[in-house]
Length: 474
Image (cartoon, rainbow, N blue to C red; front, side, top):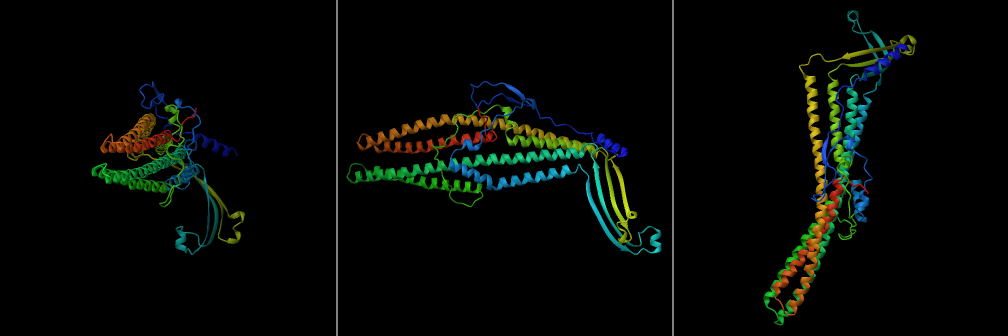
């Protein structure tokens, strides 16, 4: 018992030696608040490191952001059946299995070996140890264990775990992107529906206008030029109808692909003016983004995984010890297979280590260090891009609101100008050219106002995505 305890204590001491670097999050500089491109917002610069990370407040989920019932159903369908997401989820399970393999490498492996045979070994062959003459039977339990002296197996396990976390967050990034892409396409679809409705309404209006002008021409009140110009204006807006219909069809099919379905119709819910999106969005502070955006977390965990590979390469420069053992019975007579005299057991140790390999092991460590350096740079780039995306999204949201108010004012003015010009034309106070200009202005203003409203909705979607799938609630 003392010998066994001594071996256990010795193994514990030996396996406490863990070579290789310890991971530390790279320090990053960032503002203490997002500006959204607003020059009136005062900011100061801080260094983001592990100590700067605070617990995030609860994030608003996408179900609280998008309240259109049909959009909600569509997103739920996408999250269940999108092929890219299913692929990402499968990769997560693959990484989980790979981690299980690495974890199991820390422990002994047990197996068995059962054999039976017959051989005819003559005198000369027997004299040189060619084998045992006659029948032989054996049944053994086997054990193999590589003792993790310098942490090679532990580094491999940690690397696999970090890779699993990276894969899991990559899948979450796919989810966030799919939610944003689905919402964006849905809003574009509702915008195309709205513009198709505008075009159809304008066709009816200009058809009636052409009928009225044709009657006035037949009575000699206006020239043929007015009638021809009215026909031209009708044809122009008629051409806008199939263009809007084509956009509806292509956007619907894009949504169907996201849901893993063949081309077809998409159920509609609220129109673009009925979408109840949050009017005010507190974005939090940049340090929150480090633990909120799944692509940043994935990039960092990939860096962690690669850092552990330095430890693996470093440990390979030191010796490794493995133990093998067997316990069972062996006999030339099957009837005595359970006889105590047939018992056989043994334990053997194996020490293997490099002496001189012309710098191969040293270069292996250097290669892993340079690879880690590259992942470090990529992680920092991912963080910087994330900060820029959030700031750009906030700026776009703020400026789109301003643009929409301008387009809405332009539409109000164009509507009044058209009605006034139409009345003046039919009362004979102005020519048809002025009416044509106001018709074109009104049609363009309606399209611009519709697109601007949609861009506001999409700006919220992009901010949702940039913030990693939500934002801090107040």
